[in-house]
Length: 153
Image (cartoon, rainbow, N blue to C red):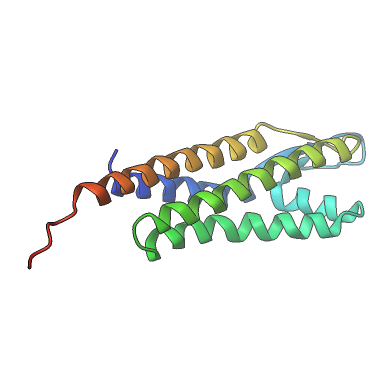
């Protein structure tokens, strides 16, 4: 894969992460749920905030909404190597925050909801994006060393 293909692939994966916030990430358990029992990520964050963890929920909501968009912007705006480096850091932070939030939500909301497969897919896609960005970072380093032109006097 060349750098352009990596940028396109990472952009598509980040767009999926933004869209995944609207997919069902859990189901409500018990008799209290009437009708639709699915919970989107936003609904899960709202319920988690209602349980007394509003700061944690707000922090994750900001990261879940802003970081994928920031990764796409970094890929398009910053110059070579800086774009991959900054995106790797943001992707690693996002993957860590997602893993922490979903594991905490799974434990704290055990009486209210069960998790579906979506949180695991979100974390896996974030890690895949991070690996692609690291690969692009190394490719940018190789291209930079190989394209040095001799100095003219």
